[in-house]
Amino acid sequence: MENQRGKGLSFARRIYRPRIIGLGIGAISVFATLYPLDLPNWTWALLVFNGLVWPHLAYQLSTRSAFPYQAERRNLLYDSLMGGFWTATMQFNPLPAVTILSMMAMNNVAAGGLRLFIRGSLSQFAGVLLSWALFGASFNTQITALQIYACLPMLTLYPLAVGIVCYRLAIKLSEHKRALSALSRTDSLTGLLNHGSWKDLLHIKFHKCQQRQMEASIALIDIDHFKAINDTYGHIIGDTVLRHLSSELRRNLRHDDLAGRYGGDEFCVILPRMSQSQALDVMERLRQIFSQYRHPQVPELKVSLSIGLAAFSPDFQDPSSWLNAADKALYLAKNGGRNQTANNAGKSHFEQTQMA
Image (cartoon, rainbow, N blue to C red; front, top):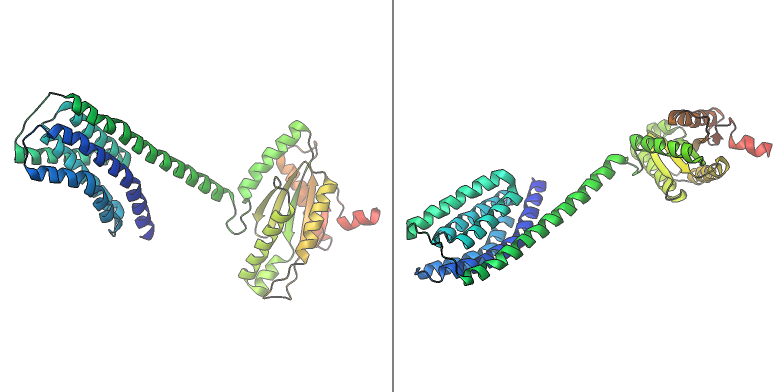
């Protein structure tokens, strides 16, 4: 309900300024055509009300309504009714009549498509019948120079106002589309890439490494005994640990490194243009920093990471074989006692340190 009201208010705001411009300068065209005719004084008062007061009154009626969208669509039908009324009152003088009716038709199509265009046309016809009932049916094909000049602002300024509104709406829709695209690619809890998006990028990076013979490494990261953390301290604490790891990944990686949540308590990272030894240093720093984490409400909670690392090799047939190498390295780190980093050469960080 609240969301629908917000959309209705946005719709009313988009219509507000074009209505001010359209009815204001449209009144000039109507005045120039009606001036030679012998009409009662109330007609001029109605023209002033319709051109200068109604745009603001219509905006207040729609914004104060419980259903702004429906109220604004009714206002558009009132606009069409008066458009038909003034067209007939001007005795269907060709230039101002076509100008007003076409501008209103454009406005109805832009605001509500074919359905509003049809309803607006029926409202215009009702306005014509109302004018004929009051003043009789008359037709005048004579166009004066004053009427031509009076129609020029309507033919230039109003389409410009509608174009600006449509352009702003297109920009907003584009921004929403980008935001939705970003949401579909990210994990809602951590803000990192989700499983599918990260694997798509892995395919891209794999083929780029093949074509350019460039170095790259991938890492699979697992939070040790994460199920026990959830079972002991609850899922809220577990989610806090996941978010902390994601923030440490963003803090310790380069801007073009690609981190994602692979699933559950497992994370994944693509490290382009990075050798295995460099990647090992980065992952070890991350592991050590993360192990220092202490939750303020659960000071006894201790966390650690097991990390499997795999450097790109031309021997890999496809991205899955590269990922499988990292997965095997992760298994080695877990099987070796956890809280360590292992690579696809089959050695943990501790073993490499001892050999050096």
